[in-house]
Image 1 (cartoon, one colour):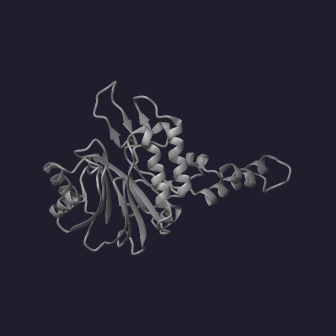
Image 2 (cartoon, one colour):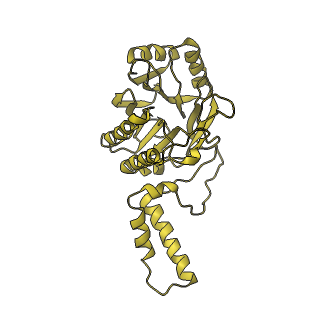
Length: 299
């Protein structure tokens, strides 16, 4: 079983629909999150009707902008929660396990002056279900400066607002393998720009239930975005215990400083070489226990 996340940049032309149909069959996708469909619900029903064996729920586009869809093969149990031009929210059973969990397809606002609407939407969605939660799609924003190559740098304030929204919702990046950047402006040097706009973010509860799932960046299809494939690790791959690594996202947490101070002060004996090591170890354990740590899986 696999899940596809794909910014298709419009499903209104026949070649794109034919390409999507072939892709779903080739990679054995059981569920697909399609963003920037640029289609109404009625138009998306016509597209899904051509795919055979798929059902779907849709968020209307605004004219020929935005639009989100979640489609699935027969045998996957999906319950609709809500939708808009920028999201589709469902509960799902029968994908990767029989545990019921929550899946949200997300398409962030493009214009800088409207990006706050993306983060408000995330916060509004948080309270609609208590199930383990995965949000996946194109957020139209990066989290770190290293996630962009070329062009003018992203404003730190905009990246911080994304991180704060994730923190407020208890969401963490689930990581990826293969290429870092998921979008290219299709220009040659020196005008080329690459960014990681597409990602999956999830609650710790979701990560705990599905520790063997990996998000893999595949090659581009007809869009200027890469395809993202959520799948199980290959048979025989073993997750190795990794060294402690300070996660950049922890800094954005309101509790980070408090956790470190409390852990550092948990031992009171005279500080020697061994005591410093103990304090660092205590801080590492406290950060992982309180804020979570996500290992990066390789496909």
